[in-house]
Image 1: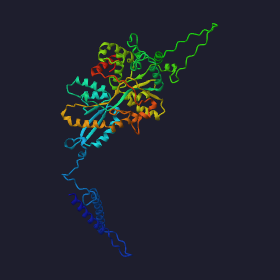
Image 2 (image 1 turned 90 degrees about the horizontal axis):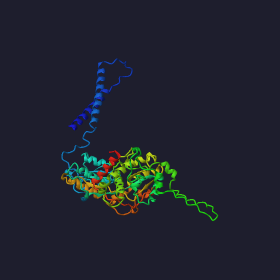
Image 3 (image 1 turned 60 degrees about the vertical axis):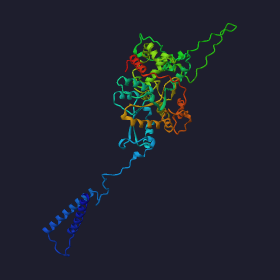
Length: 510
């Protein structure tokens, strides 16, 4: 139909051009002939000329709207065409294509610190396996757990930062459903990141001197987060705003008391000899006057009720308070001395006004607020690298990373969700292929560039030849390639709920 219209327009265009040519052609009169006024013939001729001109313009415009061609530039698509199946080009190790030739959709919810690494790996994986489509969502562990409990998230895979988050969600899920959510024995550690402390340099030097002088074997998590607070404190007469850790100077003097003056030496003539002056202190250790100016010890950690890092910190504090780093049963210790632990937590934490909801937020804000607000922060090693990278380029004061000898290492375990749901069987198989890809040596090596320790490779970090290795590049800030760490066992979900209940009651916070 369109072709017939175009041919008709072309014919009309030709006729109009001829008509204009004939109407516009005038035969000039002889020279000297008197010019007479135009008659009706002249007026009618001019009108026909103008009408033909406007008609020509209209025909040209219609012709251009239809594309300016006498035939279709692009032939219409046939009703039945052979379409090349791109999904059929996927290697055999990528598994079969999805229903109706569509890719399998695997929804992955993961912790924030894995985001850059997983995003890069996902792009490469989907190019290699076009029959599997990945949808990544970054959520803090507790935020993701709450959304799953409310039914707002139903991922194929969940990869939180900390195994404690899996144990917490598992027991919370059992309170509301008999459906199997995941199997703990199917968890697959992806990458590792120990819980560390990031401090301003002066406070780091003081902390190191205090910990090196700990001759009583007080654990770091009790000693540093509640310094000078007795194990069973009395709360009578203590205002809530004073329920905070002790002071730097008192803590330092508790570990490093000033030496007693030597008795004067008596000479034979009965005169006292001048006393020998004590050796000067290590110049790297801040002076007592500097420590006095710092006031209270302000080592922040995230809220345990909304953060995996905060829950890990609370567990480490409770273990050392109840068991003194022994291999005892924390569940039994909680039954016996839970009230003492709650009183101690109240004496240390009830006076704090602000609690950050995640280690990421706390780490980002702590050094913007400065040492007057925080001396340092308990966080994951993977979260300190962006801060240290800024320090290399900005004129900011130095900071240091401190590795407690006893700590927890976040292994970022991934678990398939709702594994017994037959309708999700194909997506779960695709998700397991994605996990196998993440466990490959190439992808594990790439995690190092993002500040994550490989979870499936046993070689030291110094053995990897990488263009970007922040563990090597940022050693001047105290980054340790192979820290010596003792990791306590993780309790079941019931113990975690009991600890969170004690902390809420102690601090009055949710």
